[in-house]
Image (cartoon, rainbow, N blue to C red; front, side, top):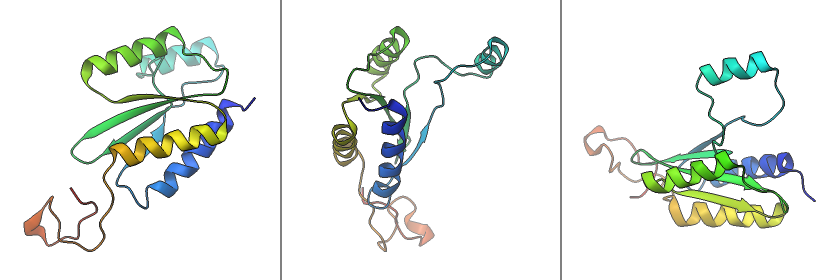
Length: 139
């Protein structure tokens, strides 16, 4: 069975590669792990939310999507289930990626290809036409 941390690392590396073709940025929310009670309380006061998905992807026009990673036997916690339900209510795309390493990478690729615009290098900007800047993506 694949460790979720190994899936997380591989997906992060793959997203870094896909970001050369698709216009997005992503980050991981370090919500896992054992912490002291005092440190956990401090993180909670700072805004850390239980159930927050593993990967947040931001893409043009202020849109985001969430990716929760699970290995072959992984199960969503109650807080992760709640986050998915709330995301649906807010209209925020929320994906559960589950399986071994290859299956998870394939699913992440499909999510990006389906939802994120491709970069178009060297074309006039459609975001700021008067700026003369080169576009980073094709709308």
